[in-house]
Image (tube, rainbow, N blue to C red; front, side, top):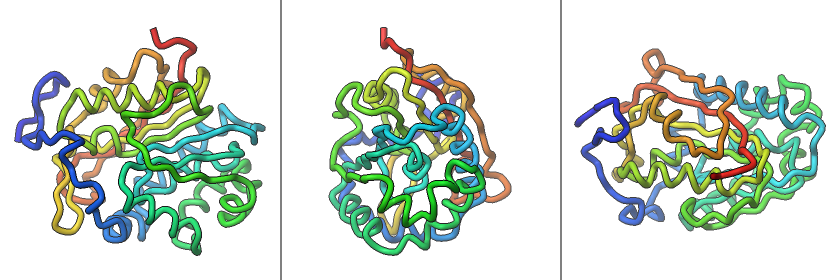
Length: 262
């Protein structure tokens, strides 16, 4: 493995392109069980940070159109937008992910209560009621099969994309393109939150390996499209309580879509 700090250098021996990965074969129940069944402290820290950021920029709004890109088995980024949205679109490329998300949102949501309880420490989230009410009564949730590379321009008022851009390919240009397509899909003035696994060497679900681009906090800042204005970027180290092997931390970038992409 190579781990040069410059984004232009190769940092991973895994160079699979997104189109070469069998995404529909990913075992979503196993992935969820390994990553979200027992809430991880770093994820709960991200929940608190995202919630505070969203409230700072969206307090009082309830009519927005939100999007979470590459949802997979992780619903807490989408939940960060519930109090502020009348419609919320969850996008994933894999048919198996679409099926899993559909079943998950139609069934009991008790497994996600610890995440919502963390959000609900903020009054705007507490006012949305219990998680089941926030999901089923307040906001219309749509689940769509699509690629991050094919998102429409300026479609949504607020957006999240967690552990996607660096985890869907081993190619650095695809990493940058995923960030650019996500930003392009947001309307001017839209708040956004994006999460990254720092220095990921790739990841495994069951007996299937998936690619990654190893990125640092400097790489994230340098790779965000010009049309975005970052308000804060936070890093949490994986040293004390790693979720898995093969990464060094988690990075959260929050910002606003500018009025121009030039």
